Amino acid sequence: MIRKEGLPYIGGALFLSSFFYLLWLEPVAIAFAILSLFFLYFFRDPERTPPADPNVVVSPADGKVISIKQHGESFCDKGHTEISIFMSPFDVHVNRAPFDGIVKEVVYTPGKFFSAFKEKAYRENENIKITIQTQHGNIVVRQVAGFVARRVVCWIKEGDSLNKGERFGMIKFSSRVDICLPSFFKINVKVGDKVKAGKNIIASI
Image 1 (cartoon, rainbow, N blue to C red):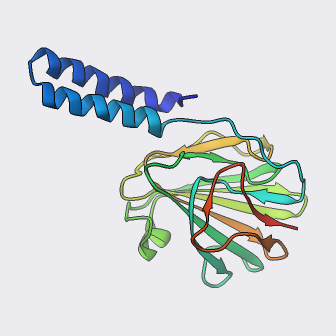
Image 2: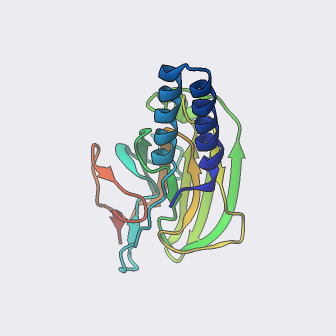
């Protein structure tokens, strides 16, 4: 499955490839054809089946775990643990609900576009913070824009019901997703681990 958000990019690259081919500029035409294939790959949206266990939290994003922080070091409220996941341009960029719950709040904060690995990106970049009310307390997911990813997309609104593994948004190109979990959850990943959204378990009760 290809996300509809990618169609303008794919179509635009194919159009330019055809245009330059007609002008006999074959190297440029080939470059745009390759770019269209990259967009096709980037905007893929594979089906995922989350674990059946109701007491596990799945990753909200594909990528690499780059930090695990306790309250005081992160944006999370007191009594929470934060896990940050970096998405490279080669990861699937569709984000998925980590747990069953009701969307309590969706807050967009405008900001800058520093590289997602930098500390100031964590503090200053554009982001959307989603609070999910669950039977075990609030879980917060934050979609953070980056140097390349300058568009954060969220498809849900306050009051919506989310099932674990359900798609709720995407970040175009590369960036990060942060998740805040109540501290009584056992963290099942470590820094450096690769995870897939809606599939890999990152925490459990």
